[in-house]
Image 1 (tube, rainbow, N blue to C red):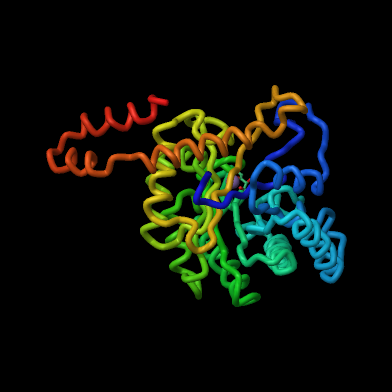
Image 2 (image 1 turned 60 degrees about the horizontal axis):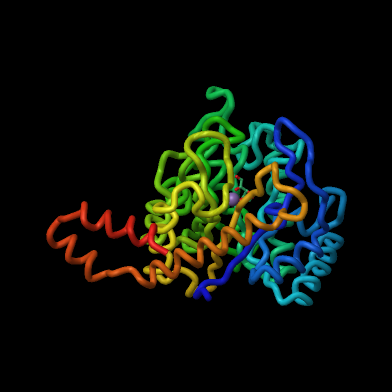
Amino acid sequence: MSNFKFSVGPWNVSEGADVYGPEVRKTISLEDKIIMFKKLGFDAVQFHDDDAVPNMNNMTNEEIIAEAKHVKKILDENGLAAEFVAPRLWMDPHCTDGAFTSNSPEDREFAIWRAYRSIDIANALGCNKIVLWLAREGTLCAESKSAVTAVKYLVEALNKMLTYDKKIKILIEPKPNEPVDRSFCGTIGHVMGVSAATIDPSRVGGLLESAHAVLAGLDPANEIGFALAMGKLWGVHLNDQNGLKFDQDRSFGVENLRQAFNQVKLLVENGYGKNGEYIGLDVKAMRTTRDDAGWQHLTNSLEIFRILEAKVAKYDYSFQEKCIKERNYEALELYVMKLLMNG
Ligand code: XUL
Ligand code: MN
């Protein structure tokens, strides 16, 4: 049992290719993934624009909306909602040098076209959240872009999206690096700054991914706390990450259980989900995983989340208060560790 609603993206069930090797698992169709997501206990699906409408670059606006409506029908048939749509700009040849911050005006224009289409697709899927993971908005060669101009381009792009549709909310998903070396918008603090610079800060918030925070050398729970304090935590991508290396998207809690517990604790304590927010996963199966276990990283993450949620429910807040009053944080720490280790 959980008090939360859960979401997942189709890319979380993958063929297992990595930068050094080819696919190792069979391809599963979007419809079969949706059917399985429901069986596994999810409430909503996260989409990239081209998860919902493959080949969209070669389609008219009307064709794109019609295809998205077809996907909405599959969702309805399976009792699932759409959580958000995210333009998958980093895969497109137009965005080799970035999208909204590209040095090329034509390529920036293309990025806006895809952002508008993502809004159309979101409307057709019945959701109003647009997620921007700003994958290539940064540099490989530090001198290749002006960090000042780039941030202004980014704000300009957000303003265009906010103007295109007055009901959408934009959730920026920060990540400090990979595939770029230096991102222009690497942490939740950056997201809040960019939000404040737009024409409607009330519609620009954040989606915090645990692994991305770890890659920035930060505690994901603290990042979640910062966004909650600003009233702008509108999505999460819970997962885990073993230190500063490539983005691992490990199952939630498998690398740093205490940090995972504190993420859940903050979400529970601050009523996350009360405005319809989902506990979103962004987890990857290990490449060694065989076809028949290709969903297990999802069920493992859900199970770990629910166990931690139950631990939060059992948490002794009066003992926490006593320790704080006595400034006995050694005792508080041992209490938390025992809570996590027992049962
Ligand atoms: C990349 C990442 C993306 C976004 C969705 O690191 O997390 O999958 O979550 O565009
Ligand atoms: Mn993510």
